[in-house]
Length: 192
Image 1 (cartoon, rainbow, N blue to C red):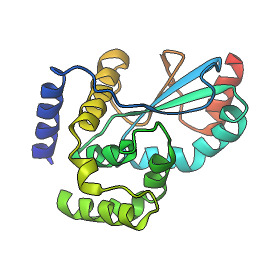
Image 2: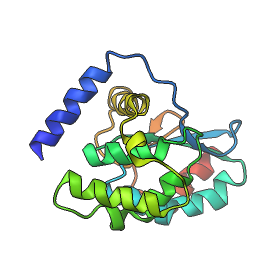
Image 3: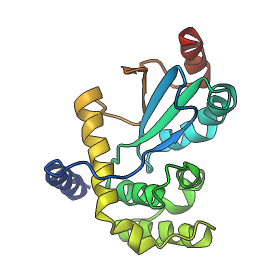
């Protein structure tokens, strides 16, 4: 595990020398919404999957679909597997969140395995079984996607001191309360 962390930080250091890649961020909601939220997340994070399954649907129904909130999902991969999964989520480069949500909904199917190779096989299988029409190898070997994802991570750490996932940034400020829909709703309602 230490080896993976060292490799990830080495790659992050190298990528900080490059200019930000031109990849479209994954967003939902009305661009002119009063409330802007950024969610830093890692696709191997169980708490992030929980957010997508239990908090996000209510946010979508009560805030995003009503034009009150724009949400941007940013990458903060905690390991190499999360980095690869993030590349899959961005592979179509259309800003659509459908693949991202699919990966979180099926996290328990692909996250299993004793090695990165095992987990990548599972990830490849669920992508091949889906209707997205993605080429797994092309996605995970795409350097522009990798640069974009690692730039998100660097920016999150530098600008917002992100240290764990999920971390929510609402109108430039970290949401510090326990991440339940009830707490988030109460906070957002004060901003409307």
